[in-house]
Image (cartoon, rainbow, N blue to C red):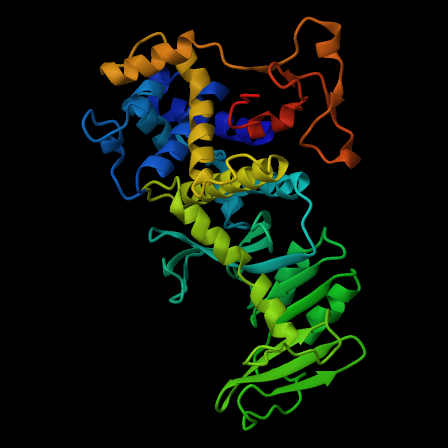
Length: 446
């Protein structure tokens, strides 16, 4: 976890821990916090999130790695006092900001999302719904989503990899405010503020002629479906023959009306296309529609992928649900970075993301296990502790030799950053900066 993020969690959790447990609270440190996060990731890999936490430590139904890492009591204590802000002045901050209980943590996390990844030519804007049925001042009901109730997050993803580049929590109307106009346009403009030269794919909630013109000023094109009642559209007939396409052009915008079925039409607007190109397929779909279908599903794919191995546990506190979603998204982003840097890693294995998450979780809990003085009670867990404490794994460090301590560019940072570091892997000899040590997973076996 980024240093700023971990500092926020450690500081505020220790404040709450001392308030709840008094002198019995032992201050949480970075190693223990990493172990806690590792347990969450491993719980998502090994068990469905609906299973009770207690059963994960059960001698018969659980896994030894949980008992070897931290005790059930320690895990539950941390979960109870996990905080991301100072509770003493929260009420005053919530008067102006509904996201106050996790605002600082969210903004630091969102700031680093796009620093590690250069998006391709296509990006996608859509909404996520993080399932939650507890009390939350901005909980949404979206019947088309699997969870139906939850926290809505506007998300920007790379269309090819589904890497999350930017996200924005929807908190509803501000206290005493009025309904926001042109919300879809405002969301896309906010999420794409740092982009230049890409194409944005979005659905009919966001797409409008005004949005297309505003994005063109930033050298960004737009492609999306449109609602037929938009005032900027011409009169569109649905009485044409099936598979018929009707095109409309302005200087920099193209609109197509396609008839997929009798008496039904689909309308798309694009500032990236300027021709009447139609495919040779039997349904004669325009190229605009084919390009839209190829790039529209990045956010939905991200939702599906993180739901497969989610670290989410049952809780009644919505800031913790947001935190779980941050962990799931960060773990997926890290997996994308790892596979793009190491394209041949387990390339013939279909479940390599599961392998990656398992290795990531074990790597996070290993430093805590190495410092354990008390052994767990069951034999399998004891064997894991002794194996880790006596092993001599490859490390990322600076050895005493001048050659090893020489600074060199980090293998993860983009070349334009020119970020140099003395830390290097003792096996493969590649340099890794402090900010990217967390992404050097699984352990190097070069």
